[in-house]
Length: 193
Image (tube, rainbow, N blue to C red; front, side):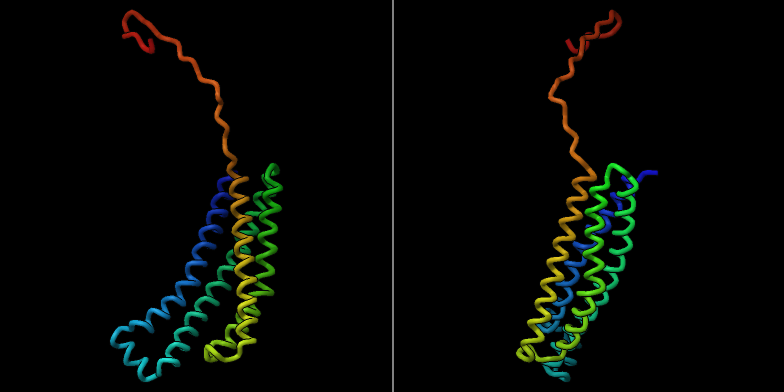
Protein backbone atom coordinates (compact mmCIF):
# COMPACT_ATOMS: atom_id res chain seq x y z
CA UNK A 1 0.00 0.00 0.00
CA UNK A 2 1.20 3.55 -0.67
CA UNK A 3 1.21 4.97 2.84
CA UNK A 4 3.35 7.91 1.75
CA UNK A 5 0.85 9.01 -0.88
CA UNK A 6 -2.12 8.66 1.45
CA UNK A 7 -0.21 10.52 4.17
CA UNK A 8 0.60 13.29 1.71
CA UNK A 9 -3.06 13.55 0.75
CA UNK A 10 -4.16 13.74 4.41
CA UNK A 11 -1.45 16.29 5.15
CA UNK A 12 -2.57 18.39 2.20
CA UNK A 13 -6.20 18.21 3.31
CA UNK A 14 -5.24 19.37 6.80
CA UNK A 15 -3.10 22.22 5.51
CA UNK A 16 -5.66 23.44 2.98
CA UNK A 17 -8.49 23.12 5.50
CA UNK A 18 -6.59 25.11 8.12
CA UNK A 19 -5.76 27.93 5.72
CA UNK A 20 -9.32 27.96 4.39
CA UNK A 21 -10.78 28.19 7.90
CA UNK A 22 -8.55 31.18 8.70
CA UNK A 23 -9.88 32.85 5.56
CA UNK A 24 -13.53 32.01 6.33
CA UNK A 25 -13.34 33.28 9.91
CA UNK A 26 -12.19 36.73 8.93
CA UNK A 27 -14.24 36.94 5.76
CA UNK A 28 -17.59 36.31 7.49
CA UNK A 29 -17.20 39.33 9.77
CA UNK A 30 -15.73 41.47 7.00
CA UNK A 31 -18.74 40.69 4.80
CA UNK A 32 -21.12 41.71 7.59
CA UNK A 33 -19.29 45.03 7.91
CA UNK A 34 -19.32 45.57 4.14
CA UNK A 35 -23.08 44.99 4.00
CA UNK A 36 -23.57 47.66 6.64
CA UNK A 37 -21.29 50.12 4.84
CA UNK A 38 -22.93 49.84 1.45
CA UNK A 39 -26.08 47.72 1.55
CA UNK A 40 -28.12 46.88 -1.55
CA UNK A 41 -31.34 48.96 -1.74
CA UNK A 42 -33.54 46.11 -0.42
CA UNK A 43 -31.24 45.53 2.55
CA UNK A 44 -30.97 49.25 3.23
CA UNK A 45 -34.74 49.38 3.77
CA UNK A 46 -34.51 46.51 6.26
CA UNK A 47 -31.62 48.20 8.08
CA UNK A 48 -33.70 51.38 8.42
CA UNK A 49 -36.55 49.35 9.93
CA UNK A 50 -34.21 47.56 12.35
CA UNK A 51 -31.99 50.53 13.09
CA UNK A 52 -28.25 50.66 12.47
CA UNK A 53 -27.19 49.14 15.80
CA UNK A 54 -29.73 46.29 15.66
CA UNK A 55 -28.75 45.51 12.06
CA UNK A 56 -25.07 45.45 13.07
CA UNK A 57 -25.81 43.11 15.99
CA UNK A 58 -27.90 40.82 13.80
CA UNK A 59 -25.33 40.57 11.00
CA UNK A 60 -22.47 40.00 13.43
CA UNK A 61 -24.54 37.35 15.22
CA UNK A 62 -25.15 35.58 11.91
CA UNK A 63 -21.42 35.73 11.04
CA UNK A 64 -20.55 34.41 14.50
CA UNK A 65 -22.99 31.52 14.20
CA UNK A 66 -21.54 30.57 10.82
CA UNK A 67 -18.02 30.65 12.25
CA UNK A 68 -19.04 28.56 15.25
CA UNK A 69 -20.59 25.93 12.99
CA UNK A 70 -17.62 25.92 10.61
CA UNK A 71 -15.05 25.62 13.40
CA UNK A 72 -16.88 22.82 15.21
CA UNK A 73 -17.29 20.92 11.93
CA UNK A 74 -13.68 21.50 10.88
CA UNK A 75 -12.38 20.35 14.25
CA UNK A 76 -14.31 17.10 13.87
CA UNK A 77 -12.80 16.64 10.40
CA UNK A 78 -9.35 17.48 11.83
CA UNK A 79 -9.76 14.80 14.47
CA UNK A 80 -10.52 12.15 11.85
CA UNK A 81 -7.85 13.29 9.38
CA UNK A 82 -5.26 13.74 12.14
CA UNK A 83 -5.93 10.29 13.57
CA UNK A 84 -5.58 8.71 10.13
CA UNK A 85 -2.38 10.65 9.44
CA UNK A 86 -0.82 9.70 12.78
CA UNK A 87 -1.76 6.03 12.28
CA UNK A 88 -0.35 5.89 8.74
CA UNK A 89 2.88 7.59 9.74
CA UNK A 90 3.23 5.18 12.65
CA UNK A 91 2.62 2.18 10.37
CA UNK A 92 5.34 3.37 7.99
CA UNK A 93 7.91 2.51 10.66
CA UNK A 94 10.60 4.92 9.51
CA UNK A 95 8.24 7.86 10.09
CA UNK A 96 7.49 7.33 13.79
CA UNK A 97 8.87 10.75 14.77
CA UNK A 98 6.49 12.33 12.27
CA UNK A 99 3.70 10.23 13.77
CA UNK A 100 4.59 11.84 17.10
CA UNK A 101 4.20 15.30 15.57
CA UNK A 102 0.84 14.24 14.10
CA UNK A 103 -0.12 12.91 17.53
CA UNK A 104 0.80 16.24 19.11
CA UNK A 105 -1.37 18.03 16.55
CA UNK A 106 -4.17 15.61 17.36
CA UNK A 107 -3.85 16.27 21.12
CA UNK A 108 -4.01 20.02 20.50
CA UNK A 109 -7.12 19.54 18.36
CA UNK A 110 -8.77 17.41 21.06
CA UNK A 111 -8.01 20.12 23.63
CA UNK A 112 -9.41 22.78 21.30
CA UNK A 113 -12.52 20.82 20.42
CA UNK A 114 -13.51 19.75 23.91
CA UNK A 115 -12.17 22.59 26.07
CA UNK A 116 -11.58 25.86 24.20
CA UNK A 117 -14.24 25.77 21.49
CA UNK A 118 -17.24 25.08 23.79
CA UNK A 119 -16.12 27.92 26.06
CA UNK A 120 -15.49 30.18 23.07
CA UNK A 121 -18.95 29.39 21.64
CA UNK A 122 -20.66 30.06 24.97
CA UNK A 123 -18.70 33.25 25.58
CA UNK A 124 -19.29 34.46 22.02
CA UNK A 125 -23.04 33.94 22.26
CA UNK A 126 -23.14 35.72 25.60
CA UNK A 127 -21.74 38.91 24.05
CA UNK A 128 -23.37 38.71 20.60
CA UNK A 129 -26.15 41.18 21.45
CA UNK A 130 -24.28 43.28 23.97
CA UNK A 131 -23.46 46.75 22.60
CA UNK A 132 -19.81 47.25 21.63
CA UNK A 133 -19.08 49.30 24.78
CA UNK A 134 -20.95 46.93 27.11
CA UNK A 135 -19.53 44.21 29.39
CA UNK A 136 -15.78 44.74 28.90
CA UNK A 137 -14.90 41.81 31.22
CA UNK A 138 -16.81 39.33 29.03
CA UNK A 139 -15.22 40.78 25.89
CA UNK A 140 -11.76 40.49 27.45
CA UNK A 141 -12.41 36.85 28.37
CA UNK A 142 -13.63 36.19 24.82
CA UNK A 143 -10.51 37.93 23.47
CA UNK A 144 -8.22 35.75 25.60
CA UNK A 145 -10.00 32.57 24.47
CA UNK A 146 -9.86 33.72 20.86
CA UNK A 147 -6.12 34.45 21.17
CA UNK A 148 -5.50 31.01 22.73
CA UNK A 149 -7.45 29.39 19.91
CA UNK A 150 -5.43 31.31 17.33
CA UNK A 151 -2.12 30.35 18.96
CA UNK A 152 -3.11 26.68 18.94
CA UNK A 153 -3.96 27.00 15.25
CA UNK A 154 -0.52 28.45 14.53
CA UNK A 155 1.20 25.66 16.49
CA UNK A 156 -0.85 23.01 14.65
CA UNK A 157 0.01 24.60 11.31
CA UNK A 158 3.72 24.58 12.21
CA UNK A 159 3.48 20.90 13.20
CA UNK A 160 1.89 20.12 9.84
CA UNK A 161 4.69 21.97 8.04
CA UNK A 162 7.30 19.98 10.01
CA UNK A 163 5.51 16.78 9.03
CA UNK A 164 5.51 17.88 5.41
CA UNK A 165 9.23 18.66 5.47
CA UNK A 166 9.91 15.26 7.07
CA UNK A 167 7.62 13.39 4.72
CA UNK A 168 9.29 14.81 1.63
CA UNK A 169 13.01 15.05 2.37
CA UNK A 170 15.07 16.92 -0.20
CA UNK A 171 17.15 14.65 -2.38
CA UNK A 172 20.79 15.59 -2.58
CA UNK A 173 22.19 15.87 -6.03
CA UNK A 174 25.53 14.35 -6.71
CA UNK A 175 28.26 16.87 -7.39
CA UNK A 176 30.00 14.46 -9.76
CA UNK A 177 29.40 15.02 -13.42
CA UNK A 178 28.61 12.06 -15.59
CA UNK A 179 30.96 11.62 -18.53
CA UNK A 180 29.41 10.71 -21.83
CA UNK A 181 31.65 8.98 -24.29
CA UNK A 182 31.55 9.83 -27.95
CA UNK A 183 29.84 7.29 -30.15
CA UNK A 184 31.15 7.00 -33.66
CA UNK A 185 29.64 4.52 -36.03
CA UNK A 186 30.37 4.58 -39.70
CA UNK A 187 26.70 4.73 -40.66
CA UNK A 188 25.79 7.42 -38.04
CA UNK A 189 26.87 10.97 -37.63
CA UNK A 190 29.42 11.66 -34.97
CA UNK A 191 27.70 12.29 -31.58
CA UNK A 192 29.16 14.15 -28.59
CA UNK A 193 32.41 14.84 -30.07
